[in-house]
Image 1 (cartoon, helix red, strand yellow):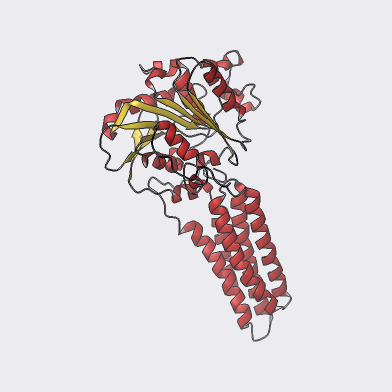
Image 2 (cartoon, helix red, strand yellow):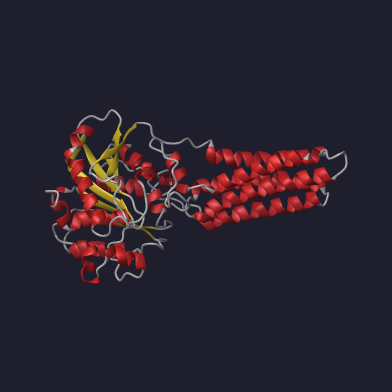
Length: 433
């Protein structure tokens, strides 16, 4: 193999590795979410600021007024974009709800309560425009994840924000909060201190401060493995509301963390955990829940990483064998590594989606295959026969090259882009979601 061919293969391998390393679990969840039967109306303006835009997800061919859900995404009140939560909007619309996913202003553009005021404005717009999308304004729920759950809870509990829009918490049909911060004082992060200052009024930033007997019913859920927002936030608000006579459904899901609890609204986690079915059952009592009721646990990220490390170690051994001239051994290990890396990493990536380690494992597998490919190629070039490869080396090269191509195709080709997708990357468009 000549120098030009080696350089070309090197560039292709580098591109494959870069594309694989840029994987995002949220992209996979979006791509695996079926869009059949869902109509998306993107970019509806609900205010004057460029951030005041929302996407509306409606059941295709829906007749009669449908219950509505305004879903607020999270991102530490600093990051996020509505397009990344296609899976959430489509999941709700697939069950007959009109789902509205707004963007809102974030820090540093605004501090508290700017983003809560935006949330109230989005809800008011949703009620006014319900008829356009077949929605029933008398059955409008607010829902959110993480910082978005904080926004939803503030609207449901502190009457000031909806009051500014000539509405009240009693106008809401209910609250759904996933991994929300409702009682998160004292603040330690300097950025959060800036967002929620001044100290004299900081208690007014906490949803639990405004819990009252007249609050709408609530579904509050957390993941037992959440290390971002302490599960005590959910437990504390649930207990406070319950003590005031408010109907509360509190869930604590084993095996889910801060990110996978919202990811469980989409596939493949939807069928492995009851989050989606539980949310639907709260929003529409009597509707058959979907999923297997949480049987089984998702593959954990460290398992995915070990799978990648194991296949990578085999690939490294195969490369060393090839460089040493052990063509037969290199061939055997090459075939084994190729199939093991692709099977284990593809399966783990589809079932885990739980942290950056999963993405790292997939990237590591691509790097392993590329390394073995070059090792085999260099061994053939250094051997006899005028640089031509023996059939065993050719077979090894073919197996590892096929693995690399299969992994790349899995990430870039096999997963179609959903409606409303944007390739623009943000700080949220990365691993983990």
